[in-house]
Image (tube, rainbow, N blue to C red):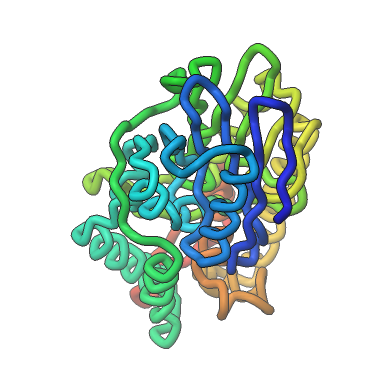
Length: 326
Ligand SMILES: [Zn+2]
Ligand SMILES: [Zn+2]
């Protein structure tokens, strides 16, 4: 088991995941209330590691008073149902993460229908639409429905560990929350920033169905701008190493977004293209395996170009194509 103490009041545990992002770091805040931040995926290994980690630190499952979730992805929430069952802990999440965590049947259906429609509109070939089901099967394999008891937005102190305040950090998901402790500038940042790789801004259906879809990369960049202004001394990410120079990393990520947008703009020199065609050009090796990721990346950068009025959308032959604005 790989675990280390960040300082006396926060413990971290690294748990392998079946996903490309690699292992996840989950945290235990030893406040007035023992608070677990994220749970790891629903795997036997995760359960055993968490069990051993609790024991090694002198705790039992029932000592966990609450679980705080940074966002709904199954590497962060998969083991939640079991943790809740064994501990009776209160579960805390952003309100917009709730339909994903509770896996409300109506929402899952709506989620799949949203992706089918948006993929079709943007030129994804029929034979690749099975990705929608594959994505859902992955969620069901490594996660299971669990209850959320307390809904929190950004800027709220966490009960039981009041020095930690939530920070709304959307973009990677539309409901992402980090925890920040002002007195020493520590942040438990979930998937908001990852040192070694750029975190993806995932396309998601709007939780409030009458709303237009969020433009994930624009939302993400706005959140990055806000966090860059914060005095963060140590950022503990859910994946990879600790981040100490968060401003530099944010600047670097923002620059890379600009470069990728420029590349897409160049690709459109040859004429209008669909988001899918562009994702094939940008990610020739992985587009067929990683459709949700490559499509989100491509559409996100197209949103950026559209907001800058460098491209416009035209309907051609029943699909949306992006055209350069000269
Ligand atoms: Zn995530
Ligand atoms: Zn993650």
